[in-house]
Structures are given as structure tokens and as C-alpha cells.
Image (cartoon, rainbow, N blue to C red; front, side, top):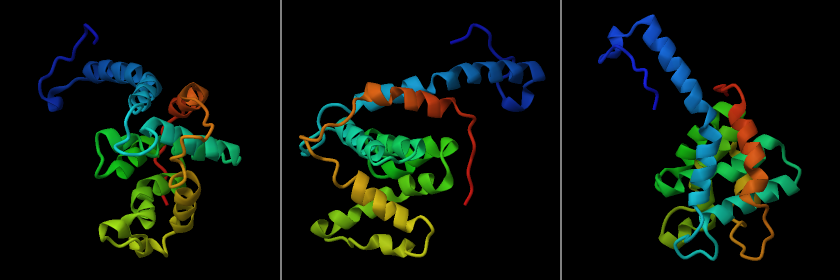
Amino acid sequence: MSEATVSFINMADGTFDDYALLAEEEEKHLQGTAGRVLEHLALQAGGFGGYKIDRLTHSLQSASRAERDGLDEQWIFAALMHDIGDTIAPQNHSEMAASVIRPYVRHEVYEVVKYHGLFQGYYYAHHYGEDRNARDQFREAPFFDATVNFCERYDQNCFDPEYDAFSLDHFAPLVHEMFSRKPQFPTP
């Protein structure tokens, strides 16, 4: 933490110099985002609550499959990041992951990550007495087919302990590159 601090205790009382200081501090913080994200991904190693692999391995398999299929960097990044919310927001992990990547990806990629949790239910929801076709409420949405494809090719099939996934170190340069981009907030 910086030794310099703002003069106010209420934001409405801040001065130009206060906000210049905060902008400088925020820029330093933003430069560390990729490192913090990689640390968080690494925390997902170990247990997966009954699955044959852990959360990190699942994400690495997803991103590896996307890369091997020749998808662009935004899709590979999304595949790596799609479950990053599982550890602290398990009931809305998709929305959390989508929020993390939103400033750095095009709208379609954001929407796919945002809705992948619901769409993924197609493969298991009926075993819990739930509607496996809940995704059909979005059948007319422009992201529907892409989300079905993402779940089929880069999520539901990424629990294989024998799959040769790339390491987190392999994807670290991509994570750094994506978070170094100027944030944008894509619209439909």
C-alpha cells in the first residue's frame, strides 16, 4: 500500500490531486491483475468434489482443447477462465467468470461464458429432477449455438484424467496479454 493517501473521508470531498493519486494507484493495481488471476487459477488445484480431476485441470483441458482446435485467443482465454468463479461463487460462477473477462473479449465470448453454467445443465440437470432443457429459453438468442458448442466441445468433456492438457505456465503469456489490453465493454 502506498504511503500517500487522499485528503478525504467522503468521496464527494475529493480534490483533483486526490483523484490523480487514486488513478496512479489504480494503474499499479491493474498491472497486477494477470498475476492475481493466475494465482487464483492455481488455487483450483486439488479436490473437485467427487470428480476424477480438480478444477484447475478441468480448465486447462478446456483451454487446451480450444487451442488444439485452432480457436482464437479470446476463446482460449474464455475456456481457461470459464470456471474461475467456482471457488467463491459456486451458485453463479458463470456470471462471475463472465464479469472478469468482459472488458477483454467480444460480446459473444462474454455471453457464452455468462450462460455456460445453465447450458451445461443439459448434460446432468435431469439427474437432479431439474429441466435439462432450461437452455431452450435462450434458443433465439444470438449466443445460443455458440454456447451449446462451447459446452459440448470445451466443458462437458473436460473431466478426463488421461487427457494431455497444457500447463498453466503454457497459458500464462496469454493471460498476461489479455489483461494488458485496454479494457472495452462490448455491447451486443
